[in-house]
Image (cartoon, rainbow, N blue to C red):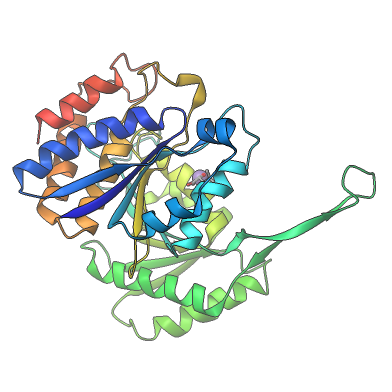
Length: 349
Ligand code: IPM
Ligand code: MN
Protein backbone atom coordinates (compact mmCIF):
# COMPACT_ATOMS: atom_id res chain seq x y z
CA UNK A 1 0.00 0.00 0.00
CA UNK A 2 1.65 3.21 -1.16
CA UNK A 3 1.11 6.24 1.05
CA UNK A 4 0.86 9.30 -1.17
CA UNK A 5 0.84 12.76 0.40
CA UNK A 6 -1.09 15.23 -1.73
CA UNK A 7 -0.29 18.94 -1.63
CA UNK A 8 -2.60 20.79 -4.04
CA UNK A 9 -1.41 24.20 -2.68
CA UNK A 10 -2.20 27.38 -4.60
CA UNK A 11 -4.00 28.81 -7.60
CA UNK A 12 -4.80 26.21 -10.22
CA UNK A 13 -2.82 23.56 -8.29
CA UNK A 14 -5.93 21.94 -6.77
CA UNK A 15 -7.69 21.76 -10.17
CA UNK A 16 -4.88 19.96 -11.95
CA UNK A 17 -4.18 17.69 -8.99
CA UNK A 18 -7.81 16.60 -9.04
CA UNK A 19 -7.45 15.46 -12.64
CA UNK A 20 -4.18 13.70 -11.89
CA UNK A 21 -5.82 11.80 -9.03
CA UNK A 22 -8.80 10.98 -11.25
CA UNK A 23 -6.54 9.31 -13.81
CA UNK A 24 -4.43 7.67 -11.11
CA UNK A 25 -7.54 6.15 -9.60
CA UNK A 26 -8.56 4.49 -12.88
CA UNK A 27 -5.04 3.31 -13.71
CA UNK A 28 -4.39 1.99 -10.21
CA UNK A 29 -7.54 -0.09 -10.13
CA UNK A 30 -6.87 -1.50 -13.59
CA UNK A 31 -3.34 -2.57 -12.64
CA UNK A 32 -4.07 -3.59 -9.07
CA UNK A 33 -2.02 -0.84 -7.46
CA UNK A 34 -2.99 -0.19 -3.87
CA UNK A 35 -2.49 3.26 -2.52
CA UNK A 36 -3.97 5.76 -0.11
CA UNK A 37 -3.78 9.52 -0.28
CA UNK A 38 -3.58 12.04 2.53
CA UNK A 39 -4.40 15.60 1.62
CA UNK A 40 -2.46 18.48 3.19
CA UNK A 41 -3.98 21.89 3.28
CA UNK A 42 -0.94 24.08 2.98
CA UNK A 43 -0.27 27.06 0.73
CA UNK A 44 -1.05 30.74 0.47
CA UNK A 45 -4.59 30.60 1.85
CA UNK A 46 -3.48 28.81 5.00
CA UNK A 47 -0.57 31.20 5.43
CA UNK A 48 -2.87 34.21 5.15
CA UNK A 49 -5.32 32.71 7.65
CA UNK A 50 -2.94 31.27 10.24
CA UNK A 51 0.57 32.48 9.47
CA UNK A 52 1.70 28.87 9.07
CA UNK A 53 3.73 27.89 6.01
CA UNK A 54 4.97 24.33 6.42
CA UNK A 55 4.56 23.23 10.03
CA UNK A 56 7.20 20.81 11.33
CA UNK A 57 4.52 18.24 12.04
CA UNK A 58 3.48 18.27 8.36
CA UNK A 59 7.10 18.06 7.25
CA UNK A 60 7.58 15.02 9.48
CA UNK A 61 4.51 13.33 8.00
CA UNK A 62 5.63 14.07 4.46
CA UNK A 63 8.99 12.57 5.27
CA UNK A 64 7.20 9.36 6.24
CA UNK A 65 5.13 9.14 3.03
CA UNK A 66 6.10 6.96 0.08
CA UNK A 67 5.74 9.83 -2.37
CA UNK A 68 4.44 13.39 -2.54
CA UNK A 69 2.18 14.72 -5.27
CA UNK A 70 2.22 18.52 -5.52
CA UNK A 71 0.10 20.96 -7.52
CA UNK A 72 1.61 24.43 -7.63
CA UNK A 73 2.96 27.01 -5.21
CA UNK A 74 2.52 30.79 -5.41
CA UNK A 75 -0.25 33.16 -4.28
CA UNK A 76 -1.19 36.64 -5.50
CA UNK A 77 -1.51 38.11 -2.01
CA UNK A 78 1.71 36.65 -0.62
CA UNK A 79 5.06 38.31 -1.35
CA UNK A 80 7.21 36.35 -3.83
CA UNK A 81 9.62 33.96 -2.15
CA UNK A 82 7.71 33.22 1.03
CA UNK A 83 5.78 30.22 -0.23
CA UNK A 84 8.33 29.19 -2.84
CA UNK A 85 11.11 29.04 -0.27
CA UNK A 86 8.91 28.06 2.66
CA UNK A 87 7.16 25.15 0.94
CA UNK A 88 8.65 24.00 -2.35
CA UNK A 89 12.34 24.64 -1.74
CA UNK A 90 12.07 23.62 1.89
CA UNK A 91 10.67 20.25 0.86
CA UNK A 92 13.31 19.74 -1.83
CA UNK A 93 16.07 20.60 0.66
CA UNK A 94 14.76 18.95 3.83
CA UNK A 95 13.87 15.72 2.04
CA UNK A 96 17.18 15.88 0.17
CA UNK A 97 15.51 15.54 -3.22
CA UNK A 98 18.77 16.26 -4.94
CA UNK A 99 17.64 15.51 -8.48
CA UNK A 100 15.06 17.46 -10.40
CA UNK A 101 14.19 15.19 -13.29
CA UNK A 102 12.57 16.94 -16.23
CA UNK A 103 11.81 14.97 -19.40
CA UNK A 104 11.56 17.14 -22.51
CA UNK A 105 9.60 14.98 -24.89
CA UNK A 106 7.45 16.10 -27.79
CA UNK A 107 4.54 13.70 -28.14
CA UNK A 108 2.94 12.98 -31.51
CA UNK A 109 0.06 15.33 -32.20
CA UNK A 110 1.52 18.13 -30.10
CA UNK A 111 2.66 21.26 -31.84
CA UNK A 112 6.16 22.60 -31.22
CA UNK A 113 7.04 26.17 -32.16
CA UNK A 114 10.26 24.85 -33.72
CA UNK A 115 9.97 24.63 -37.47
CA UNK A 116 10.65 21.24 -39.06
CA UNK A 117 11.19 19.39 -35.78
CA UNK A 118 9.07 16.50 -34.61
CA UNK A 119 8.83 13.86 -31.87
CA UNK A 120 11.97 12.08 -33.12
CA UNK A 121 13.98 15.28 -32.62
CA UNK A 122 12.74 16.45 -29.25
CA UNK A 123 13.31 13.69 -26.74
CA UNK A 124 15.75 14.32 -23.92
CA UNK A 125 15.89 14.50 -20.15
CA UNK A 126 17.27 17.29 -18.01
CA UNK A 127 18.85 16.24 -14.72
CA UNK A 128 18.83 19.43 -12.70
CA UNK A 129 20.76 19.57 -9.43
CA UNK A 130 18.11 20.43 -6.87
CA UNK A 131 19.63 21.26 -3.48
CA UNK A 132 22.58 23.60 -4.06
CA UNK A 133 23.81 26.43 -6.27
CA UNK A 134 22.13 29.81 -6.14
CA UNK A 135 19.12 28.18 -4.50
CA UNK A 136 21.04 27.49 -1.29
CA UNK A 137 19.88 30.89 -0.04
CA UNK A 138 23.34 32.04 1.01
CA UNK A 139 23.73 35.79 1.00
CA UNK A 140 22.51 38.90 2.64
CA UNK A 141 21.68 42.56 2.39
CA UNK A 142 23.44 45.51 3.93
CA UNK A 143 22.14 49.10 4.15
CA UNK A 144 18.88 48.00 2.60
CA UNK A 145 16.92 50.72 0.87
CA UNK A 146 19.77 53.21 0.89
CA UNK A 147 21.84 54.23 -2.07
CA UNK A 148 24.71 52.26 -0.56
CA UNK A 149 22.78 49.02 -0.49
CA UNK A 150 24.81 45.86 -0.91
CA UNK A 151 23.27 42.50 -1.77
CA UNK A 152 25.04 39.18 -2.14
CA UNK A 153 23.68 35.88 -3.35
CA UNK A 154 26.27 33.15 -3.38
CA UNK A 155 26.15 29.93 -5.34
CA UNK A 156 27.14 26.93 -3.25
CA UNK A 157 28.56 23.81 -4.89
CA UNK A 158 29.83 20.90 -2.88
CA UNK A 159 31.90 18.13 -4.39
CA UNK A 160 29.50 15.62 -2.82
CA UNK A 161 26.38 17.38 -4.14
CA UNK A 162 27.74 17.84 -7.63
CA UNK A 163 29.16 14.34 -7.85
CA UNK A 164 25.99 12.54 -6.79
CA UNK A 165 24.02 14.51 -9.35
CA UNK A 166 26.48 13.75 -12.15
CA UNK A 167 26.56 10.08 -11.16
CA UNK A 168 22.75 9.91 -11.25
CA UNK A 169 22.80 11.46 -14.72
CA UNK A 170 25.35 8.92 -15.99
CA UNK A 171 23.28 6.04 -14.62
CA UNK A 172 20.13 7.42 -16.21
CA UNK A 173 21.90 7.89 -19.55
CA UNK A 174 22.99 4.26 -19.44
CA UNK A 175 19.37 3.17 -19.00
CA UNK A 176 17.93 5.21 -21.82
CA UNK A 177 17.42 3.76 -25.26
CA UNK A 178 18.59 6.82 -27.18
CA UNK A 179 22.19 7.76 -28.00
CA UNK A 180 23.80 7.09 -24.63
CA UNK A 181 25.09 10.62 -24.55
CA UNK A 182 25.39 12.88 -21.52
CA UNK A 183 25.91 16.60 -22.00
CA UNK A 184 26.99 18.76 -19.09
CA UNK A 185 25.67 22.29 -19.32
CA UNK A 186 27.53 24.99 -17.40
CA UNK A 187 29.24 28.36 -17.62
CA UNK A 188 32.74 27.19 -16.81
CA UNK A 189 34.25 29.94 -18.99
CA UNK A 190 33.05 32.57 -16.48
CA UNK A 191 32.22 30.75 -13.25
CA UNK A 192 35.82 29.60 -13.00
CA UNK A 193 35.54 28.42 -9.39
CA UNK A 194 32.15 26.77 -9.06
CA UNK A 195 31.87 25.36 -12.53
CA UNK A 196 35.47 24.25 -12.53
CA UNK A 197 34.41 21.94 -9.72
CA UNK A 198 31.60 20.68 -12.00
CA UNK A 199 34.01 20.21 -14.91
CA UNK A 200 36.47 18.16 -12.88
CA UNK A 201 33.75 16.08 -11.23
CA UNK A 202 32.22 15.36 -14.64
CA UNK A 203 35.56 14.26 -16.09
CA UNK A 204 36.44 12.09 -13.10
CA UNK A 205 33.06 10.38 -12.74
CA UNK A 206 32.97 10.07 -16.52
CA UNK A 207 36.01 7.80 -16.45
CA UNK A 208 33.77 5.16 -14.88
CA UNK A 209 31.34 5.41 -17.80
CA UNK A 210 33.49 5.01 -20.88
CA UNK A 211 30.52 3.48 -22.76
CA UNK A 212 28.67 6.80 -22.53
CA UNK A 213 29.44 9.62 -24.92
CA UNK A 214 30.33 12.71 -22.93
CA UNK A 215 29.78 16.21 -24.17
CA UNK A 216 29.65 19.71 -22.77
CA UNK A 217 27.91 22.95 -23.68
CA UNK A 218 27.91 26.41 -22.18
CA UNK A 219 24.43 27.32 -21.02
CA UNK A 220 23.95 30.15 -23.51
CA UNK A 221 24.93 27.90 -26.39
CA UNK A 222 22.71 25.18 -24.94
CA UNK A 223 19.71 27.51 -25.31
CA UNK A 224 20.64 27.98 -28.94
CA UNK A 225 21.03 24.23 -29.61
CA UNK A 226 17.80 23.41 -27.81
CA UNK A 227 16.02 25.48 -30.45
CA UNK A 228 18.26 24.83 -33.43
CA UNK A 229 19.24 21.16 -32.95
CA UNK A 230 17.27 19.67 -30.05
CA UNK A 231 17.98 16.19 -31.49
CA UNK A 232 21.57 16.51 -30.28
CA UNK A 233 20.52 16.00 -26.67
CA UNK A 234 19.88 12.73 -24.88
CA UNK A 235 20.51 13.59 -21.22
CA UNK A 236 21.64 16.96 -19.87
CA UNK A 237 23.12 17.44 -16.40
CA UNK A 238 23.06 20.99 -15.10
CA UNK A 239 23.23 23.12 -11.96
CA UNK A 240 20.11 24.27 -10.17
CA UNK A 241 19.71 27.79 -11.56
CA UNK A 242 20.53 27.01 -15.17
CA UNK A 243 18.37 23.90 -14.94
CA UNK A 244 15.45 26.04 -13.87
CA UNK A 245 15.89 28.31 -16.86
CA UNK A 246 16.54 25.79 -19.61
CA UNK A 247 13.58 23.63 -18.56
CA UNK A 248 11.13 26.46 -19.16
CA UNK A 249 12.61 26.66 -22.65
CA UNK A 250 12.36 22.88 -22.79
CA UNK A 251 8.69 23.03 -21.81
CA UNK A 252 8.01 25.38 -24.69
CA UNK A 253 9.64 23.18 -27.31
CA UNK A 254 7.75 20.13 -26.04
CA UNK A 255 4.41 21.85 -26.50
CA UNK A 256 4.05 24.25 -23.59
CA UNK A 257 3.77 24.44 -19.82
CA UNK A 258 0.60 22.37 -20.01
CA UNK A 259 2.55 19.19 -20.74
CA UNK A 260 5.83 19.46 -18.81
CA UNK A 261 6.10 17.21 -15.75
CA UNK A 262 8.88 16.72 -13.23
CA UNK A 263 10.10 14.66 -10.33
CA UNK A 264 12.10 15.88 -7.34
CA UNK A 265 13.99 12.71 -6.61
CA UNK A 266 15.74 11.43 -3.54
CA UNK A 267 16.88 8.00 -4.72
CA UNK A 268 17.14 6.89 -1.09
CA UNK A 269 14.16 8.72 0.37
CA UNK A 270 10.87 10.41 -0.40
CA UNK A 271 10.40 11.90 -3.86
CA UNK A 272 7.93 14.55 -4.97
CA UNK A 273 6.20 14.84 -8.33
CA UNK A 274 4.73 18.01 -9.82
CA UNK A 275 3.93 19.78 -13.06
CA UNK A 276 6.68 22.30 -13.77
CA UNK A 277 4.20 25.12 -14.32
CA UNK A 278 3.25 27.57 -11.60
CA UNK A 279 -0.01 28.36 -9.84
CA UNK A 280 -1.33 30.76 -12.53
CA UNK A 281 -3.52 32.63 -10.00
CA UNK A 282 -5.49 34.59 -12.57
CA UNK A 283 -6.92 31.37 -14.01
CA UNK A 284 -7.97 29.89 -10.66
CA UNK A 285 -11.37 28.25 -10.81
CA UNK A 286 -11.83 28.99 -14.51
CA UNK A 287 -11.18 25.40 -15.61
CA UNK A 288 -9.01 26.50 -18.52
CA UNK A 289 -5.70 24.97 -17.47
CA UNK A 290 -4.44 21.89 -19.27
CA UNK A 291 -3.91 19.18 -16.62
CA UNK A 292 -1.66 16.99 -18.77
CA UNK A 293 1.53 18.01 -16.93
CA UNK A 294 0.02 17.10 -13.58
CA UNK A 295 -1.34 13.82 -14.96
CA UNK A 296 2.04 12.95 -16.46
CA UNK A 297 3.65 13.73 -13.09
CA UNK A 298 1.33 11.15 -11.51
CA UNK A 299 2.57 8.66 -14.11
CA UNK A 300 6.18 9.44 -13.24
CA UNK A 301 5.30 8.93 -9.57
CA UNK A 302 3.89 5.47 -10.25
CA UNK A 303 6.99 4.41 -12.19
CA UNK A 304 9.16 5.72 -9.37
CA UNK A 305 7.16 3.69 -6.85
CA UNK A 306 7.89 0.58 -8.88
CA UNK A 307 4.41 0.44 -10.41
CA UNK A 308 5.87 0.46 -13.88
CA UNK A 309 2.83 -0.92 -15.74
CA UNK A 310 0.54 1.59 -14.12
CA UNK A 311 2.94 4.46 -14.79
CA UNK A 312 3.39 3.43 -18.40
CA UNK A 313 -0.37 3.14 -18.84
CA UNK A 314 -0.82 6.71 -17.62
CA UNK A 315 1.90 7.89 -19.98
CA UNK A 316 0.33 5.99 -22.87
CA UNK A 317 -3.13 7.43 -22.12
CA UNK A 318 -1.58 10.91 -22.08
CA UNK A 319 0.02 10.20 -25.45
CA UNK A 320 -3.24 8.84 -26.87
CA UNK A 321 -5.17 11.86 -25.60
CA UNK A 322 -2.64 14.22 -27.17
CA UNK A 323 -2.63 12.29 -30.45
CA UNK A 324 -6.43 12.35 -30.61
CA UNK A 325 -6.37 16.08 -31.27
CA UNK A 326 -9.27 16.47 -28.82
CA UNK A 327 -7.29 18.57 -26.36
CA UNK A 328 -6.99 21.58 -28.65
CA UNK A 329 -3.80 23.60 -28.50
CA UNK A 330 -3.24 22.85 -24.78
CA UNK A 331 -3.29 26.55 -23.96
CA UNK A 332 -5.80 28.37 -21.76
CA UNK A 333 -7.67 29.17 -24.98
CA UNK A 334 -7.95 25.55 -26.10
CA UNK A 335 -11.68 25.50 -25.48
CA UNK A 336 -11.33 22.21 -23.59
CA UNK A 337 -12.00 22.35 -19.85
CA UNK A 338 -9.59 21.01 -17.26
CA UNK A 339 -12.13 18.37 -16.26
CA UNK A 340 -12.89 17.26 -19.81
CA UNK A 341 -9.18 16.85 -20.47
CA UNK A 342 -8.83 14.72 -17.34
CA UNK A 343 -11.92 12.67 -18.30
CA UNK A 344 -10.48 12.02 -21.76
CA UNK A 345 -7.18 10.72 -20.39
CA UNK A 346 -8.99 8.62 -17.78
CA UNK A 347 -11.19 7.09 -20.50
CA UNK A 348 -8.11 6.05 -22.46
CA UNK A 349 -6.48 4.05 -19.65
C1 IPM B 1 10.41 25.33 -10.75
C2 IPM B 1 9.95 26.64 -10.19
C3 IPM B 1 10.58 26.84 -8.82
C4 IPM B 1 12.09 26.85 -9.02
C5 IPM B 1 10.11 28.12 -8.09
C6 IPM B 1 8.60 28.14 -7.94
C7 IPM B 1 10.77 28.25 -6.74
O1 IPM B 1 10.23 27.68 -11.06
O2 IPM B 1 10.10 24.29 -10.14
O3 IPM B 1 11.06 25.33 -11.79
O4 IPM B 1 12.66 27.90 -9.30
O5 IPM B 1 12.68 25.79 -8.89
MN1 MN C 1 11.13 27.04 -12.93
